[in-house]
Image 1: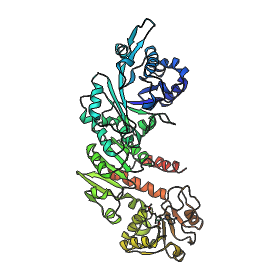
Image 2: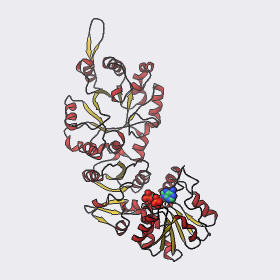
Image 3: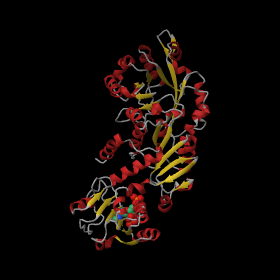
Image 4: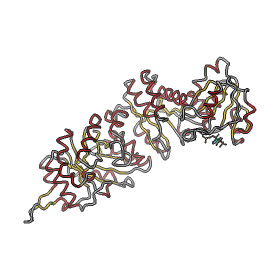
Amino acid sequence: MICLTTTASTVEETLLQVKENKEYIDMVELRLDMLNENELEDAFRVPQLVKLPVLATFRRKIDGGKSTLSNKLRIAKLRKVVLQGEFTYVDLESDLKKSDFKVKLNNEGEKVDFEDELRQRGIQIIRSLHDFEKVPVGLYSLVEKLAKKGDIPKVAVTPNTIVDVLTLFRMEDELKSVEKKIIVGMGDYGVCTRILYKKLGSMLTYCAPKGPTAAPGQLTPKDMKVLYRADKVNDNTAIYGIIGNPVFHTDSPKIHNPGFDGINYNAIYVPFLVDKIRSFFRLAELIRIHGFSVTAPYKREVLPYLGKITREVMQIGACNTVTRIQGMWKGTNTDYYGFLSPVIEKIKTGSVKKALVIGAGGAASSVVWALVNYGVKVTVINRTVEKAQQLASKTMSSFDSLNHIDKYSGKVDLVVQTTVVGMAPDLTSDPAPDFYFTGKEIVYDLIYSPDHTAFLQRALESGCEVVNGKRMLWEQGLLQFEAFTGYHYPRELVNSFEEILVNNND
Ligand code: ATR
């Protein structure tokens, strides 16, 4: 189930949040602690109005909520709302004492037990435990203990490493006996556990409305349902993903998930924030990941873990795509082919024979190798000339200092700009203002935001044919999809693919 955690301060606003997300959710967690005091009176009406199962939660400050009331008072307020309404679940913190649930009914000292009342009414208790700092030791036995009372155990903990994430994914195997449970990994490392909640054996995943989220790492219901189709994950779902640190800026999930859907492939593509690549491979084996994209800083670090690599990966020393083939991890580099795609015909027909590559970093390395492998003569130009020399000697190319770039004007067929100079928000910088375009050369800038850097704009105005980084990004994404699935990216989605890239550059 996808559960919307409300964050509104009024009942009216709560109803609006549910309405806006209704098509994406299966249940609602009504956060009573978020409501203004005077709204509590009306809160009992929510289940009837939203026509979905509702979980009532009155969260304390120490558990990430807003309530600063004493436990006794808080439970009394929660009880009042719950017993008037038609709630399906109630969340009670696992450390509350028996005495906290005893509610005084009158001055004669008559008392009732809130837990008993809930059971009599068939309202299920969720017994929750939160840890905003770590994954506590002995997590499995903690869950077993919580489950013993016959309630639904909930643990919301904070993984700080991929090893912690592994602990959460092992839950399903370790705790088969606890059928109904809720497991949440909070924070950035936990995002993959929220999306793959079914693989953890969790009966639900919590989402938050757009805007200030209720808990760290929460996604919107729409992303959970439409982008990830998280509720459709089953034993046969093939898991793919992207690893990096940072990783959440990437557009890749928006490209691959709709693509999988478009070819009717039961698969999901998830971002994994990774601290240690070695631990990630253990996770990949555990949850049987079929393939993944690799982004900074792991493009080189991933190499020792691969059983098979292509010639380009070996030459460049960097891999951005890993697939599982016959029990072995295979590394390819679609940046290499993605770069080549827009210019390959020109190279093959002989109209590109000489190229100037500006920059000598990781991106330049893919570019120079691609060009050299196809017989283009390359000169590497860099601010730090030693780095240009290193790359040139590996690739049997020439090199020079960026200060001398003007002398190459009119002498090359292709100019490739690989540095970060001119990338948004630095829209006016030009890495080589002294370089004069004749209008005959093809000018290729790897930067994809903005569409046209100052450098590319100057080339365009001089009449050059230009290629931007967006095109390369697109090409390498299509190739990656093919490497993952063996199918072309669905034709009807190619336009939306472009839209994703365009929208994100605004
Ligand atoms: P990437 O993996 O994106 O290529 P990188 O390996 O850090 O990133 O390489 C960055 C490239 O941009 C280098 O060639 C760098 O030049 P130096 O080797 O002299 O550092 C180049 N670069 C970065 N800032 C630059 C600037 N302000 N002017 C010129 N070149 C710059």
